[in-house]
Image 1 (cartoon, rainbow, N blue to C red):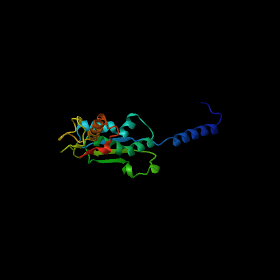
Image 2 (image 1 turned 90 degrees about the vertical axis):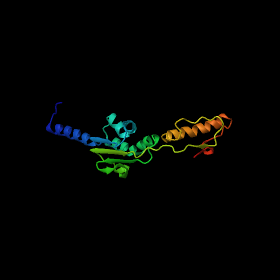
Image 3 (image 1 turned 90 degrees about the horizontal axis):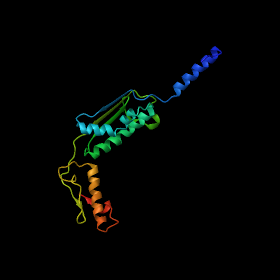
Image 4 (image 1 turned 135 degrees about the vertical axis):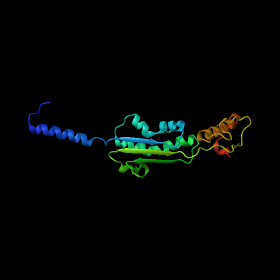
Length: 183
């Protein structure tokens, strides 16, 4: 590109610098995802549930995207853990040394150099007893809703749904979870 004057060249350089500075903040240079003591299966499930790792896979380049994903990380990982019967986890998400949950959304960083996610799952919980009452005659509960099996939220939800469906199948169209007790 030819410039007619030195002034035109300087204006073009200034415009390019302004555009560069006005662009969104740079994304995280380094994302670490740590799951000490977790099985390979649990690690895989947590990685699949992680909004941060999804952002990294999608090659997002905006720091705001990574910050939002860091704040969403807690709920997504907690849901994945509860589904697999881990009810006492400790989850930390550090954005440049600060806990993501402690950073107000309006104070989001313009640039992020490092994000460290650490998930300590704690023990997995199993059913020591299982009971739903009252049950309609012929109701089939999920086989996973049994003593000694993992007490994941999905299994509990499926058992409650089966109990309600059992009542609806016997002519109680208005049956709902409120009328069925899990003990």
